[in-house]
Image 1 (cartoon, rainbow, N blue to C red):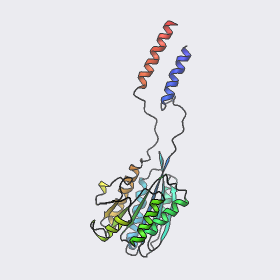
Image 2 (image 1 turned 135 degrees about the vertical axis):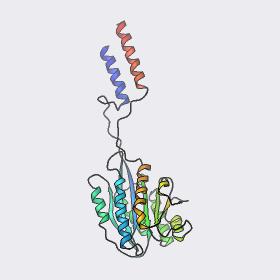
Image 3 (image 1 turned 180 degrees about the horizontal axis):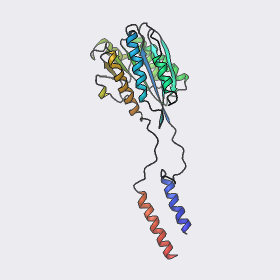
Image 4 (image 1 turned 120 degrees about the vertical axis):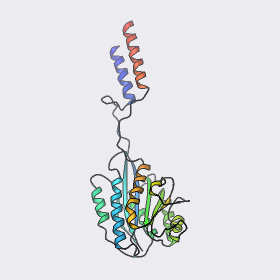
Amino acid sequence: MKRLMANAAVAALVAFGGITGIAASSDKAEAAIINLGFAIDSSGSVGSSGWNTQITGLAAALDSIPTSGANQYRVGVVAFNSFARTIVSPTIVTAANIAGIKNAITSEAFSSGGTFIGAGINLLVSDFNAAGYQASETSLMNVTTDGFSSPTGDAAARDAALAAGWEGISAECIIVCSTENSGGSQNLLNTVVSPVPALFVTDTNALPNPLNQSFVLKINTFADYEAAIKAKVGRIVTDTGGGGPTTSVPLPAGLPLMLGGLAVLYAVRRKTA
């Protein structure tokens, strides 16, 4: 009987799990993959100085992405002007490769041209598909630009991304989005970001949840870009689970009461045995 009661107590502990030394053997829940695509402007109006500010700022912002924990973050980076080119093929960020990813971004040379945001969106979709992207995964795209391109081409690219399963596209608009009603703002709000209606945001401390709300973030100068993209990436990480480390399950509030009941039952059975 004593062995039976001891086994019952252990079984109760194992059923609740997460208790040091007695926890049931269980594999960590499969990590969710969060896809983050970044398209940055390499058009002539950006210039080499603006380009360097963008790539330095984006590389610094990636420090916010967890390299361990409950979620995995797959990052891909492209640049666009009249065409688009891949800077970082979609890669799961780890402690071992984060430095290499950042170096690939900051080493990319400036290449001038026109502005076709849709080319960047299309290339991100293609690159992620090649990397094994699944439509069931959480996927967010981010566009940085100081201009705007053909509304028809941008809208078609946006719609294709949504059809492929991307959940949201938001943008940072540098310089040209002076007001919500300016041409650059309206182009991005109406033909690039999604879902609509989108918000026009001017405060990096009041960014919406990108999983629920698309937006255009106004950035006054290239010098302000790094702080803005750091805030944006930080908000994305927070809203997608933060990638915090897996911890033991806390002791359930009702477990001590249950164990107390087992102890009483054992004492009664021992007395009457």
